[in-house]
Length: 133
Figure 1 (tube, rainbow, N blue to C red):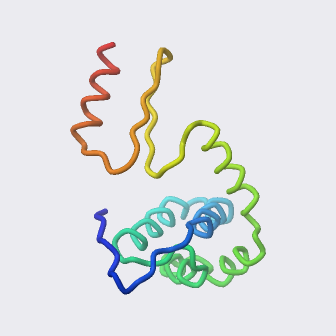
Figure 2: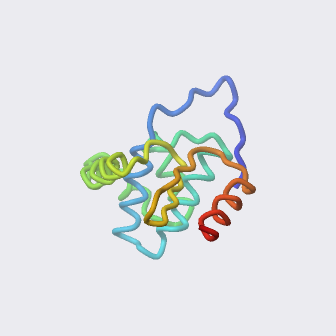
């Protein structure tokens, strides 16, 4: 996956909760499609500038995978997975996760948070450091 900056004329999404709800709905209703759905949503957002806060756009993206786009849109409108997504968000915040991506490495003696677009070499150094200590 590669990031393509959004065109200036296209407004950025206000939030991504609908995409998180959609991913959870797929996980619950079609578990075997969950990984593909997550990847499709990320690619749509980061590579094609799709607003993953828009239920119509989400339905189009996931419908392209053969998933039930109308059922998904109805689930989003009804908020079927919203409470669980909010709970997952709260749990992440309580664990110190406040950005995406965040990788937490811990060896029981301490932990390191790696936040944002971090070069592979930095991850490699951290993993080697954790393995050596």
